Length: 256
Image (cartoon, rainbow, N blue to C red; front, side):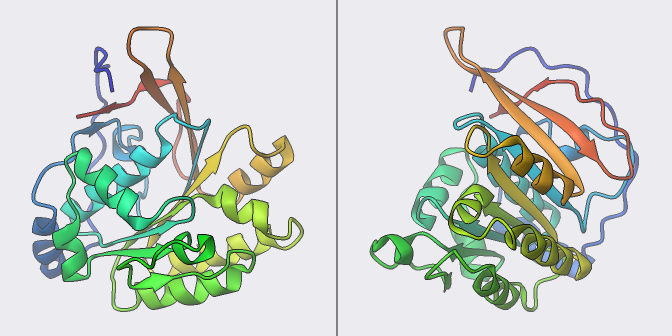
C-alpha cells in the first residue's frame, strides 16, 4: 500500500487494559513484532471502552477490510488478547500467508493456542482438510457457529474474534432469522469479556441489509480505495461508535 502523508494522530485517553498481566506476558511475545498499521480504532477515538464491543467493517471488495481485521487481531496479540479468526471465503492457509506477508507471522501463536481458526470454507467447498482445530460443515445454520465458537473461546480471556465474512452467512441463511441470531451471538461473545468484528461486503446486499446489521453492532468502520493514481490509496472512516463521538472523516489507512 502506498504511504501517504500521515495526518496528526490524536492522543487517546489513558485506558486500563482488561487483560490480566500474567496473560499479557505470555500472549504478547508470541507474535514477536510490532503492528505498524494506522489508524487503528484506538487512534480514532479520544475516550471510551474499546473492549467487549462488536465492530462492523463495511466496504467494497479489495478496499482493505480483511487486512484491517488481520491487523486488529495482530495488534491484540501484542497487547495480550488471544485471537479467533472465522474464515468463510478462503482457507486458513491463505489468511496465515497473508498475515505473514504483512509481517505478522502467527504460527507461534497458533502453536501456543492463542490464535485459533474456525474454518468455515474447506469442508464446505470440498477442499482438503486443514490443520485448523475447528471447522464448520455448513453456514446456513448459525447455531453450529455458536457452538464451535464457544468451544474455541473456552479458557480464553478477553479474546478478539473476526468473522470474515458476514456476507457469506447472509447469502446462505434465512433473512428473517439471521439478524436476531447474529445479535444473540454478538451479545454472548461480548458479555463474556471478548470483542467481535464482522466483515460486510459493500455492493452485495441491499440498503436495508446494511442498515440492519450495522445497527446491531457497537461500531461501524467504512473503507474505500482510490485507484486513480500510480498506486492505490486506502481509506478508513469511523462512522459510528457507541459511547464516544465519531468524526466520520476519511483517514489514509497505511500498512507497513
